Image 1 (cartoon, one colour):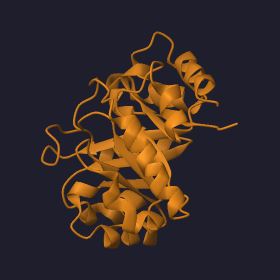
Image 2: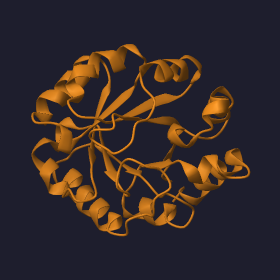
Image 3: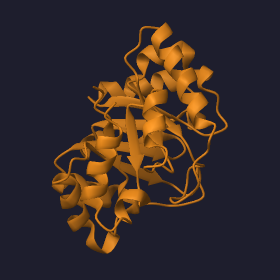
Image 4: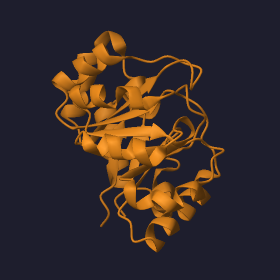
Length: 220
């Protein structure tokens, strides 16, 4: 049986009750914290920065999965390691020398992820798939929560899975954007290992139960 990793996106949490929502994730069946860092340049939005991340990592008791939607991420690799990130994901579209960036992330003791925007073909990762711990497929356009899921995502997952298998890599596939009970099972059947869920979890009447339901739904 496949144990799908559920990673609630803290961007959708209630910032006025952030510690409460962090404790909810700590005490739930969720596996990771997914934290989006946006600079207002790479994406048309600004999210929290270093001080908020530091506050989250102080209380979080699970894997910290940081997704950088910023230009020139190399400048901050060491900082994110210091702040307690376990996984650091950079965008393919933001890295001129992706291989070097991945090596720098690993040198700081973190796992290295690469995120792909909806328009980017997964084939661009073929030559470095063995250096990537995690590929984050954006199933919405990055920058804002609550967007509609892009249906082409299933085909991208299947194509990426075949690249991973063909190269004998152990890369995990993460889906970020528009994940709900309507598509979670199909995403996992296509080959996804990690589901990032934001509004679907935090806007639910009972977030803890919603996470339980997602876990059950994706145990295939």
